[in-house]
Image (tube, rainbow, N blue to C red; front, side, top):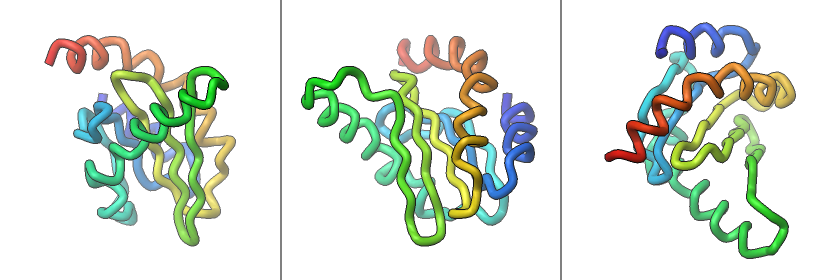
Length: 120
C-alpha cells in the first residue's frame, strides 16, 4: 500500500505528502518526499479537519466532503472518508485539480483500512 501511495505521489508535480489518518490525526499510512513540511504532518494539525467538518455540518448544508486550505507556500487538501481522513500536502504551485483526481485512485485502499480503524 505504501509503495502504491509513493507511486501516486510521484504522478503529481509539487505534491509533497499523502497521509491517511484516523479522525484524531494519528497516521495510518503515509508517503512523503523529503520536502514535506514536518509541522503539517503532526496529529494536532491534522486533527483540526475532523473538528472543522463537525462544525461545518451544523450549517445545514449537508455532509462536508473536503477542505482545501491555501497558505503562503503550501496547500492542504483533506478528504472526508470517515473514520479516515486523507490529506494531501503540496507546494502552492501544485495543481489542485490533479490532487483531487487522486481520490478515485486512493478509494480502493480505504476499504480495508476503514475496517481496521473502526475496530480499534
